[in-house]
Each structure stands twice: as C-alpha cells, then as structure tokens.
Image (cartoon, rainbow, N blue to C red; front, side, top):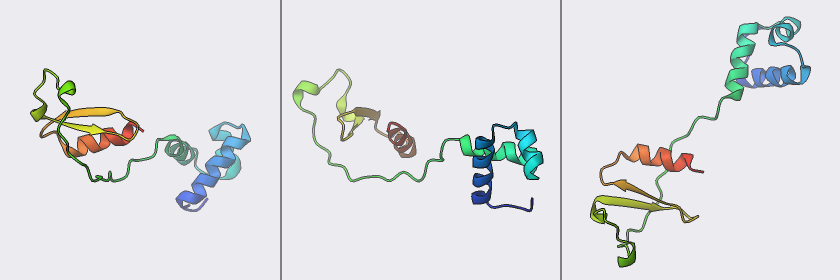
Length: 106
C-alpha cells in the first residue's frame, strides 16, 4: 500500500479489528506492512494527547476562620472546582504542573 494518511490508517485499523484476524494475516491480505499496522494499532489505542491547558479567571477570597488549618494558609493556593473538589498547592508551584493535574482530574 502506498504511503497513507492518518485517516486512511484509522480505516485500516478499524477494518482489522472487525476482521478477527491476526495482525500479520490481515496485513498480508490487505497488502500493508505488519509492522506499520501494529504501530497504527498502538497509536489508535493510546490515550489522546493533552492539549494546551487553559487558565480560567479566578476569584481569590480569604478562607473562613473555621477552615484555617495548622498549615500557614498564606503559603498555599487553593483551587476549588465546580464540583466542590479542593486542591491546595504551595505558593510557587509550577503552573504547568497544576494545569496538567487539574486537566487529568476530569
């Protein structure tokens, strides 16, 4: 098979999955490289890459006295998601780390 774009390989992988054949047998029948087929199967099975995290506007408010812990709250940044989950980070924590963590918390 001539060089194929991603959409073409996605179709080949879908056909392979419906075939109930081994990758080697399917590749022979389809006229594609078994190595390439296996590589595209792995790519199709891989989790999607994370895009650029967006930073949303935040409102910083002092914590109510009842929520003050033994840790100095002035040295922490707290993020509260819409579902009520709270995550605290030390001031100066890498912003890309925080963005990745929040993104992966779904």
